[in-house]
Image (tube, rainbow, N blue to C red; front, side, top):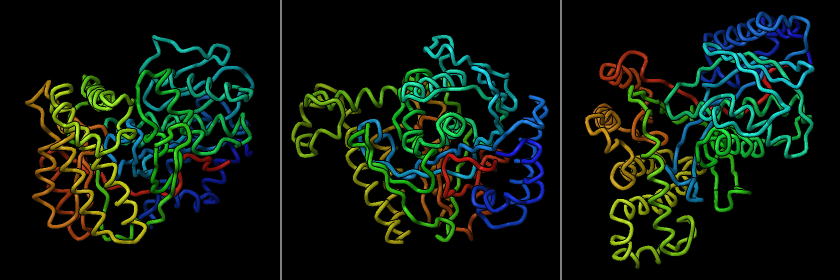
Length: 431
């Protein structure tokens, strides 16, 4: 491992340009690479200034955001999803500090310190970064590794409230730092994802599935079958989205995810209620033909919305398999038609484009309506958990400027973000 001073010199001299280009310069422009190099240098410089660590061994780590491509709200029912890591990430310069303390300074936020001598969950830390660090550390210790402290300075380009899962990016980042410094890089990407989910479920207090962490940790486009959540089937899809002729856009509608926990929980609860009718915990374990035969009874017992949400699960679970096959076969037109089908199902059956608690706020349906108006071809759908936040669109490159200007005229400058699926998940960038 290099000292922080040596790492800075190598970054400035372009020694790590090839790695940075693979992570961030996916449009192949020199400007992108220059921006990536400048950010890496700035992160290392601020680490050195924060901790006085010029001569301390240090490394650069990345935890990317993720985009859900297929399978909206299917993972928590042990279904199948298609997701991918993106070129927006959390980047940290970190170094062992020889203590039992983890100290993290995230740019723009208060510094946090976590003692590795006490890794029990803290009620007062729920919904905080401290909970994620403590939870990741606790799970790694449970796996039998001896922990030691580190210092880190982190920056982020993962859009807040975007459905790109900043929490999964953070968990992946911290998991990779512990893996490198304490585990001899023995933890694979799937294990790091499971560690992140544990931290989020048990310490952070969010009952999420595993898709977010897998999309961040594994890298590239990834098809995941959660039939056995303890041992999911993970398949990388070797498709170069940059050669499709379409750009991946995430449009931030400016609507807040605040106070939507009840909406998210209701999706899981209602799907679970349908499964419980058959003595099962999740819909994946209920045969479709049994579900169809029981529709009259399910309407009376669970209500129509729960039945519709179950219909969405069965259809989107099947559709995700077809989307992955279309990409493997290089048939992007078929893929786009399936994305549009998924979007319509989310709106009509899953009903996660707006919250019944605040019917005046329907920014997601409005964004989808405007996207459909602006797109002669392509696809659009709600992105992530839904109810507020962002939409996803695949936009023909020839129409990209018109689409971007149209969406930003409605939602504001800088609200339409052009992303790339990056081939690498959580990783050590440079050392």
